Image 1 (cartoon, rainbow, N blue to C red):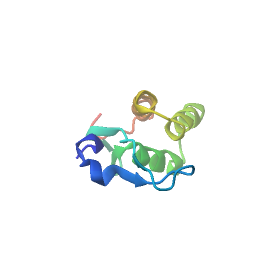
Image 2 (cartoon, rainbow, N blue to C red; image 1 turned 120 degrees about the vertical axis):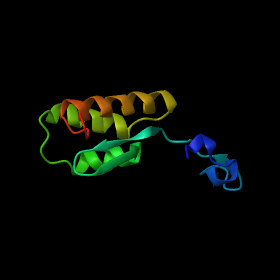
Image 3 (cartoon, rainbow, N blue to C red; image 1 turned 180 degrees about the horizontal axis):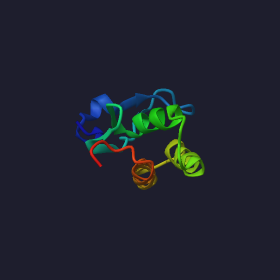
Length: 102
């Protein structure tokens, strides 16, 4: 289920630093649909999954690109930036030849 399909109540966060009683809508996170199937039976469904994978991957052929993509993934403040980060991760796993069946 995509975050945008989740009921609003399940995406509500209570309070902010300046207004603890206020309830704000949590931003939905980008999800890969269908999920990325990587070699080694790794499934990447979200940007969080991508960050976990990229930080644990120890043998990159393109280490500078890996670091750039990681910074994009960790610093994506909005929907558009999340999409760019998701695309950058997909490009990186393709360059590393990590997609199952490619």
